[in-house]
Length: 451
Image (cartoon, rainbow, N blue to C red; front, top):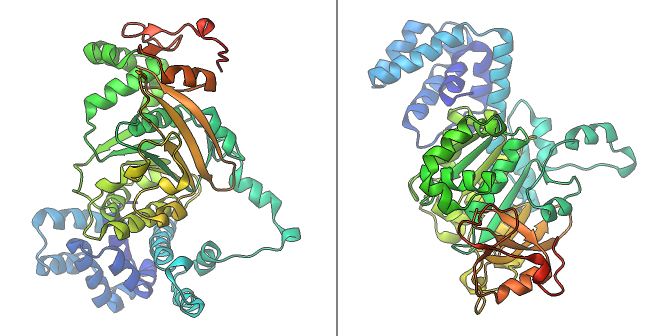
């Protein structure tokens, strides 16, 4: 639920006790949000009156005026207060759960085991939790199970069907469930120009077709025109040049195409680089209700989040926050990044190529690297997509050609080796890009075994 409604709900007597007992967590979460900080202090100061059910709408309005809120903000909060007074018991139950989740996630972020060098300090941190769902918190921070007493039915319920198919067969092969497993953070790493955004757009569209709602955060120079041309080129298998020169016609076609109805599942956000921190972005999407509404979150890319921290600490903080964002059933998070510059020319990018900090490699559940090495005489966008880390799965790699429609296509090693020295830009059969490149004749390439 939205942040304003959530905090205003703390003025309800049956909710106030949760807010009061966990005030330090709430104040920490909303630190820097002046309006929310003042509201929390008001709840803290007026707790006795609120808990006894004697806090009225008139008192609330007078307190807001005394706290120098603007008339517009007072109106918003007053409407939320009136709505709260009419909540049913079911709605109050939902508020209590939402509030507990806010507190729980904040507490877990602060008390992860790797943040403590001393086991004693770790135990003290756990004991310091003061939330209603303390047992659930304990299970997420520490758990143990006797192998012969595992609840198989519950385990099956948790994982069955919670896998998103990738557009790349190799990635699905790596997963024990045949796709990206939920509650995971996946890093996609590639040097500038390697096609990270195109790969993530291709995956985002694949997820939308599976009925998932995808929120794509563009933190670079991508704009609406880029997304329109790239998505339509990939999906209609037309060269990006052709789509760009006729994009009004192709876009109108897509809007009237019942086969493209899945586009309703895609929301694209644009933020200027270095204008919003990862913390503020997560607070923003939660305040708008997007965290509950959307299943998949894609951040493109990590270094463009704003931060006053030193580079390595910024990377670790950002990835911890993104990992927490994924830590709920039915949620997937993807983040794009660049490898270390000394790996730019490598034919296969390994795990250690991850930029800035090894902590990022440890935090993520899956890592996908996209190489785009320079080849003498080569005129085509080819490389290796490598999976050097897949939690609970297998490691693998595949050769690819990024066609002129912006799609990544898996190709055989023989075709890959031939393309290394191909002096002409080519396109694959059926790519729809014959208007800009000649179509490669797979039968005329010696020893070629196309997939």
